[in-house]
Image (cartoon, rainbow, N blue to C red; front, top):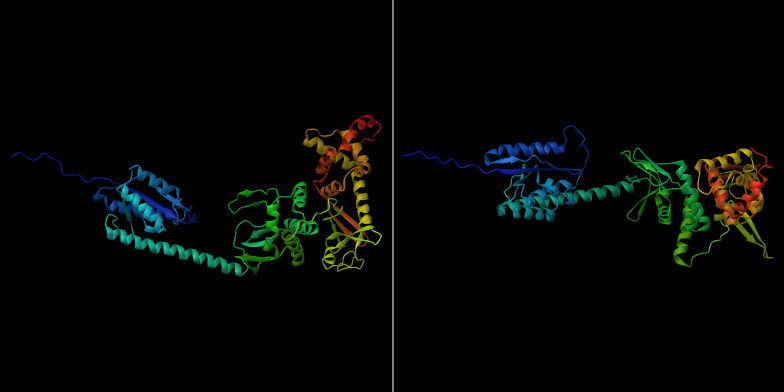
Length: 473
């Protein structure tokens, strides 16, 4: 009898894909992280099933920093695509919730597995998804996984609410006016000055459009900051939407808001209650009735003048019986207390000041400074440095600045106000006079504003003729 020449039956190979997941990216930079631990456990399980023909495929499917509550995960999408292409026979995970924490999503995944003859295995929870009992067990465990996820979400929401009720800052991009140190908001003084300036200027004239234009001219932007990962996020132009969002942010009152409720915060306020109420009285007035037509001729020192105690002086006026109108600058708190244009002193010990006198005194200093040789040279050098198209030549700029009084008379009030804001950061009153704080970048802005005016253009030819007679600096 001849011996049999047929070979023994071979066990079919089953290609095993290992899927790992971690909800956060914390710790993934360690030498041996959670994803590697999950993968090693799965590979060990596959090795124990070698007699069944199980072999691990080289490709890894690792999702680090992705939630199991949805299917928007790059490695999972790649795994499902490979299953549809027939490259995988078994999917191995360390635990069932690594694949999904959503019962609905898991049902879709299992349907895809069945359609392509793929088996699902959990290293710590062994199942056979080809049987009804295995499906029931999986669904029960997955229901508990989804329940755990929802309970965890509720706990996080409750913790956030409790922390905010204690006035704690819960992270995110810090608002303009604050920095974050040791997970707490601390005042950024330079930005806080801008925030106060925005609130008070809006309370003075109530025009968001005008305020946006002024802030753009002054080069003001939203907050520029560096994230914890070192990424720089530059500021952008302030628009009306940003303005109103900022003026409704109760953080500036020293409060923390959560779902319509406000709590005392652990940070210092930037805006006091009186200024906040004044701003929101204007905002509420915009909602209730017709728009107020604000004057197109703003007071020259609006937003710039400060009393000796640091309190802002705001423009006011009174009309006499003969119809004549008298303008004043009044301490802010005195104005809000309905003191009007009274000459009685307020909290700062200073009553209302005649607008014409104080504006004349400031303009006198402005004209003197602009006619100083070193300032003329600085303005001309800025034009040379920038090399902008259509820039005026040296004689034209020099003559225009020498004749600043004449040029000034040709400007509209709104233009005068804009130029003063470009040049001056603050006018600080003293008991015996005043001090002007100039803007460092104001001279370049002034030069550009000067070039735009038709009267200065008219001086070009006259300047060329008189350049030889002009005192050169």
